[in-house]
Image (cartoon, rainbow, N blue to C red; front, side):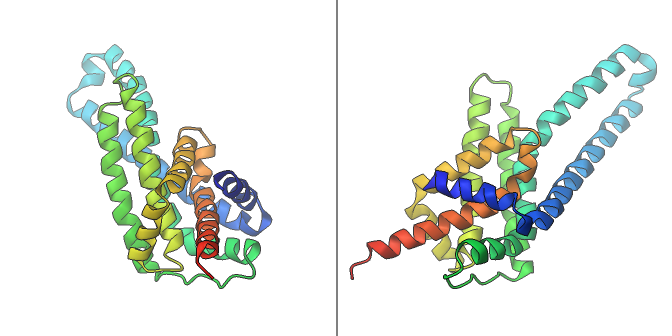
Length: 232
């Protein structure tokens, strides 16, 4: 079920129908990351200037510059899950509607959440994701544990957020959460796939759109499976 959903999601992500949303989501993701990069580099430069590091220790200044660049690269990887959730909140209903219409034409369409409510929900969860990833970043250099903490935390958080956003088009928030818990193994496996994509350069930029398509398919397949299991 997960592989079938992932294959269909990849096909949809690269399809002409979603190409416009793909470019918009890529642009927004890169834009947010660029702003974060710019903000942090300005803070580092201000710190160096205020402590006169450049004038007193030019070698240390150069070393700090390159170390800061590496640190920013690592930090942005840890920030990507939160950024991904915010971007998904912008394009969820537009992308989900296309996936539902093209791959499930005989099913009733989902109902879009009000944009303000959808973004508030996404921002709230992005904040939680950011806090968790900052905690994981603290133990980044601990062998094995740092990577495991990043992967495990984001597999859970991404599976929870993406699935519940897709499911909320057909049921209330409590119902979406209950369905996710009822199918915790499958949704977590889908989250593992998304967490794995986060650490692959370039590929991680398409995670928001791919995640939406993946969870729309997974929700639909789980719903159909549950209906078939009901006594007739």
